Amino acid sequence: MDHIPETTYQAAKAISGAVEAHFARQITLAQQQQEDHLASQIPMQTIEAIIDATFWASLLREEGHFPKISLAYLHPSQTAYPLLFEHRYSLSPEVLIKLAPAVERPGIHIGVWSDADGLYIWGTTRIIPNLCFVLEVVEPGMLVIKHRNFHGFGKFVNVAVLHGGQVKMIDKRSARQPDCPSLLTSLLGLNASWNGSVNVLVQLAASMRSHQRGGSLLVVPVGTHTWSNSVIYPIKYAISPAFSGLTSAIPEHRKPQPSEVNLLDKQVESMAGLTAVDGATLINDHYELLAFGIKIKRSAAGTPVEQVLVTEPVVGNEATVIHPSQSGGTRHLSAAQFVHDQHDALALVASQDGRFTVFTWSADKQMVQAHRIESLLM
Image (cartoon, rainbow, N blue to C red; front, side, top):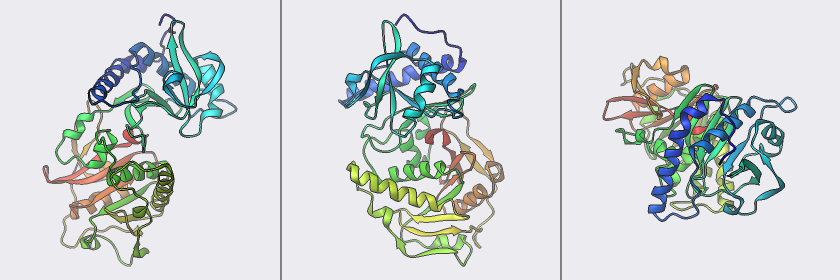
């Protein structure tokens, strides 16, 4: 490809090589496992150029609005029902900002391909191949590189996050750490088959973050009641009998049909919406709703949580031990205390500023772990 404009966004240069290697490695592994409908490998120079044009477009306004767009690198022949423009358009910030209002709805991708004349936009699509390079504008100056899950359901797998001059490359090796929760494993794209429990937690986490009000979700084992020692009574919004709307919408151990996906999405949104109410939402690990608006307290038999191990699944991150008050506000401190007292529980905490933390008990470290996962949820 001869006609590649000079890159002026330095972060694009910094990360393009690592991204090329990631996609090449994943596609090779998928071919060895005889997966089908795979995307073409994307060269480093192409990655760099797409990031550069999209970053500068993200800083522009069209009729007072910043763009929220998604670009996918694929030829029209690699998708079904493409919307094809009669004339191709060069990939530039000016073209992207003009197209943005038409493609800002979720699930629509601007189709980008390259030939001897350079990169060009050929149209839009909703269907993309497995491991297709996708670049999404989250907000001005913030981009996320991702690809679709193999079975086409659920949240895309994030590869890297670029925010201004800051670059975060997702580190799948985080899943090798002792006591890594299955939620994190799923977000890293390491669960190849449909598993209702893990994927529903991923959907709940993403929905909690998207409502931007902050919230806490406590997950306890079904049939246990020790959690009652860690909450203040009376519970303002107790549910009796336990509500199983979300549970009944989960197809077990198989890819859902489109109608089931729609029902599941609605149930997930409803459950996540409850977390915006002051206090924590409580469910069991069968996704039955037990209560919301819960106030957490230290168990009478427990001790104050004094330290948590903070991790983030990005390249170069080192786990650090801090006092729980340093991990966030009241929600974070109370969630850490809950898990400190209830070792078999899981606590998901969304902040209004977009941060997202999963608290679990580490039997290996004998302390609460705080997994920072907002870079996986964007």
